[in-house]
Length: 199
Image (cartoon, rainbow, N blue to C red; front, side):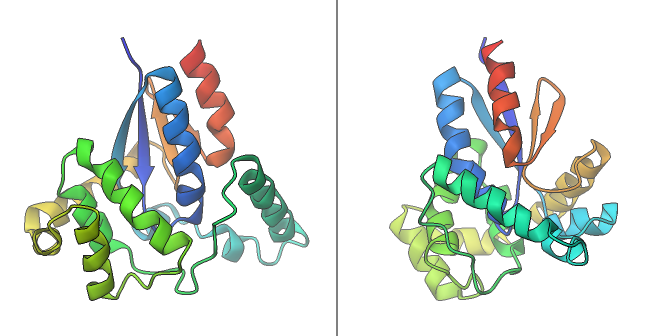
């Protein structure tokens, strides 16, 4: 029986971009199912008292510089050199998350695949509705329908519930993963997840 990797996900996290491609490859290698659970990172931070590391650690001498060193090592290891910090970061990801929330899990990976390169390689302004719509249409989605879904009260509520449930389960940031009920946080945990899948 195949294992499931649940990914708590928000487009706004650069680490969610960096982990996405190696995570997909690892899931495929081990025949694992990838379950994507959209959650609003800003809401998670508010509920937990957490903050983005570059803000939280700004006064700690050397810590952000070391974090950048580790990020560059990860980028090199996984051939993610197309990554560019988005100049609009931290951007409002609510619309994209509601779109993701409104479709079945089987379609969510395709939507993430469509949006990540424009956001984290081509520096897309996600508030540009026309640009986002064009990207979605070219990826085979009904962009007008997805935008309409973002105003559905049930979709809005489900995203809020997901965010609160993630925090209730112990999550405080993104990317967070669950395998067999066990939590892992951060792109650096991929090796531990793979060991669990292999075992």
